[in-house]
Image (cartoon, rainbow, N blue to C red; front, side, top):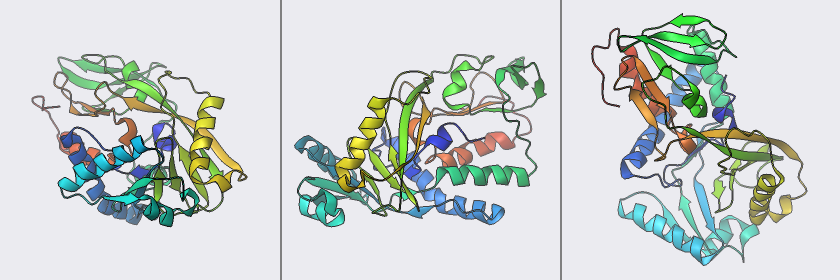
Length: 324
């Protein structure tokens, strides 16, 4: 449970840093970010678990004139909309991260970005489900969604078991395209991301991102991500991918090269052709509710996805399709 893209993520909550497009998608991400404090507080109170949520800020670092120009454009566009983002010169970046002094030429500081430990978040959500009497069947692969007369009736698993249900939420991530019984194939594909982490307390508290890697601090280790590879469901780590991550780490912190590697892993982002998530009830199959295609922003969009799907899930009978 939660061992796919959820476990593989870095836990950054960064709608501005990700520069989400179009504007409506950025607004969705910002709204979801604003819901996180209440969402986390309720989850932690119910489960007694902590999920590593905090406002960390994010520092984008440029090492080339082209990267600096990109950051300047990012800051100008969002500043014009009244958003809290600041352009930093080389000296200011060096003051924040002494190890890049003399090499970094510009930066962008986003003080309102947050971070959460996605693995702790998944475990807490699992605990909340247990407390509420939700039954989770691990290792049960759904073969198809069952329906009759344009209305969902349940699902059937690969081993032939059938489960009756008036509503089905399709939240299979990158594997959603393989589920049968849908009105149309879902336009989903996996985009592989390789990641790693290194042992030891991070030398910074904020998230740091460059054009080659992002660095997410945890209490006793540092997460380094992530490649973006169109290779399908190939689970292997590659020397090329891991080298790119290590080079991205050492570009920011040359002195961390002697630290032990703690973990190396792979995840699959669920990507759509336009990069936007698929949310809401299916327009052709009543009771089928989509929650997929979040690509790089699944953790960020968790609260808003719940809020968006809540009304459809609470209905006893869905008489007509709602807008997707």
